[in-house]
Length: 168
Image (tube, rainbow, N blue to C red):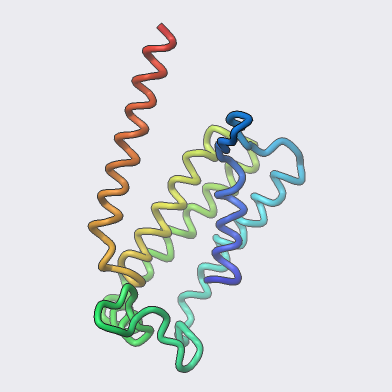
C-alpha cells in the first residue's frame, strides 16, 4: 500500500488541484504528454496492483502493530484486519474491485485527455480509498469522516451559490 498503491494514487490526486498562495490561486492540470503519462502510470498501477491485495499474506511485517495498541488505538491491528477480511471476503473483494474500477476509469479519462472528468475521478478515487480504510484500517473514524464529507459538500455547494451570484 505505502510503496505502490499510495504513490500511484498520488499521480492521480496531484494531477488536478487548486493551490492558493500569497501570490494568488493557481489551478494545476495536466498540460503535457508527460503529465498525462504520469497519470496513466498511476491508473494502471492502481488497476493492476490492487489485485495484490487478493493474495493472502500478512498486512504488516512481523511485530508491526501500526497504531493499534494502547488505551484507545486509532487503527485496527493486523490480526483484526485479517479477521474482518476472513469474516466477509465478499466485502473485501468488493472494496478491491471498487478501487480497480476507479483505476480503469482514470485510464479512460487519460485516453480522452479530459481534465473535467479527472476532477471527478479524483473524488471517486478518494471515496474508494476511504471506504476501504474506514472499514479495515481506522473504523473508529467513520463518524469523523462522515462529518468531514458533509462539511466538504456544504462548502462546495456554498462556492457554487457564490459563483452563480457573481455570474449574474
